[in-house]
Length: 162
Image (tube, rainbow, N blue to C red):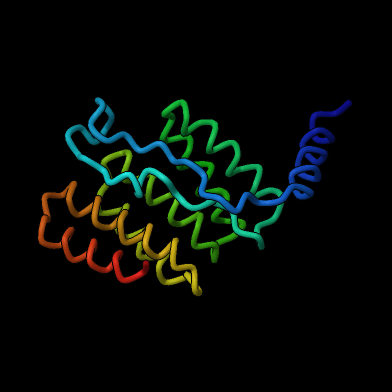
């Protein structure tokens, strides 16, 4: 059989599955020798909301699943590439922007992490948990840049979304 057939078959099966309602873990290295040494991330930043929302298509879910597998291996550049491809398919999905922000934070790209989390915030419609998560990402990014005052402000904003 042709390889294209299997790809279409996998996409079709992925479209049949539901999206988990509980948060999906995102491994963000805190102080264990990763790209952000010494940065103590709050536990809430490590636990991300599910990346693909209910409106996401099967191809997006497949890309996110592949990204999750690579994240467990710490292949952050490849994870970012898959999430960027998913964003081309679903550019208005705030969870994808948030997930990419977490990856950029893990890579030590603090400015980009904050920018991506803000993009997610701009797309959120009533998802308090995701808004709280994005503000925690922003706080961690600011902390990583050494902006303690800005990090405190972001943590206060996160607390509003409880």
